[in-house]
Image 1 (cartoon, one colour):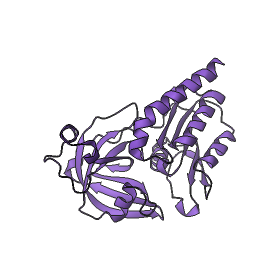
Image 2: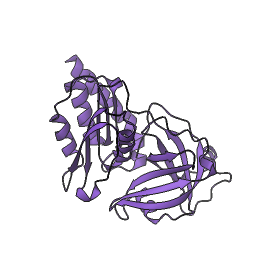
Image 3: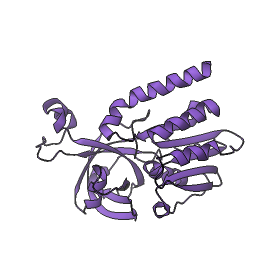
Length: 283
């Protein structure tokens, strides 16, 4: 899953079809989508590429051809399609096939239930892609940290690591059944953290605080629930003194807030964090 990043690929609208659906773990569903509409999509530069899936509101008739600008102009906001941001897990430009992973918690939410009920031939509409991060080959080592929402990007980043590149990886999931087999040519030390009934991210914060950082410059990717991301950003920026240009760090989602609410408040959230860091640096 992903949210707004500094680098974007524009607002291209793509029509695609569901090709097949695969349950990766009891709570992770991989949906493969494809079709000629994906030609020239521009995926591949980053390992955190994301798309914004569009879910039409039931009972609302939309203009044909489907046009978000026209919809925003002519329809009331409560009739606009719902948008949910998700990371591209894999991309095959030759087959024009993309996979996207969804966390599924029963009937909770919008995208998870859609993925669970998706069938081959179903229509898919999305905007994007966007993205900004790829493990830097110039870094001395890499730090990858995230919850389930960041797992697809972390998995893609591990696959992109140069051979032998040192990496410390911490991934938090609910329990052992949610672990996945991840592939990398890098020298990655991967630690799965099992949350159980604890708050999301507590185990990640503890793990990073307790990590003995290797020597040299780190390139870090830290994403997931906004609460623990904020705590780790302060730790990495203020206590560890890592320059912002060596960090890809942002909240993908926020506990107790849906995607629309989080997008609406994220700019202010970022502003408050930057002000706190500036005060800490000055003091």
